Picture 1 (cartoon, rainbow, N blue to C red):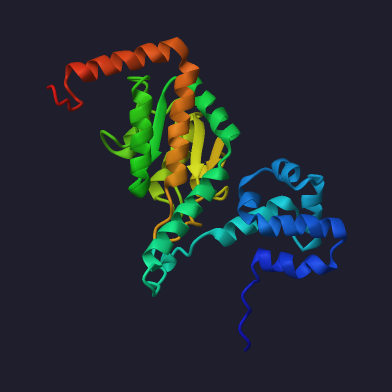
Picture 2: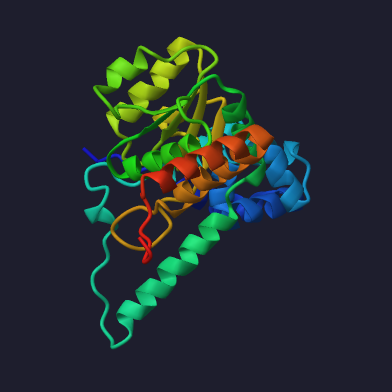
Length: 291
């Protein structure tokens, strides 16, 4: 019995179909093929504005190559970018390349990929999410495993001017205890990338149950901890070379959220930050040669 052939990738399907499409759909198809990351992270209207096309042409393109609509094609593109779960880190590793400058080349490639990824982050989406943080009664930050460092950074920066209103999920006890404390009026920030931690997904679901505002900082719209998020802040994790996905975009988003939330806080936030700085100075938290 013949074995079933693996399904072609959506990009291969798209490129194979291009010659048979009407000229206008060919143009839209080439744009999607050349900007597949943007196609998975930006809205159809944003893509159309950049491509100089009618938003409906993206739906027509998807249907022309066998999908029910743009959402299904975008989901397929997103899934195609997802790393294999069996070996999420070692599967990304490349063998050491030969040559006297191979290491320097790898560093340059990584820095270039990181810079390109930062350029794709939506500043508008971050500003909208920061307004939600500013208006929330309390803010909960959930990040686990490698994303714990990003969660701790955002918690630290927000607490400098919102003391008592910001908590790190699982920071002082089991995660599920904090989940039970989520309330409507709170904002819950969940950070993750594939492979996703179970704890991040459970935190997002707990936020839904509580009626809290969910802000997901994720690598794809298909991330399980981003399902139904009120604000989805996307960053590029998988494109950077190296064995481990990149957290550069997540860190940039976290620091941008804190910066905008502080600005929105106005004079009150500035006063609380000054009070925090005075307390840190009194307890000699920062090293001084004169101390």
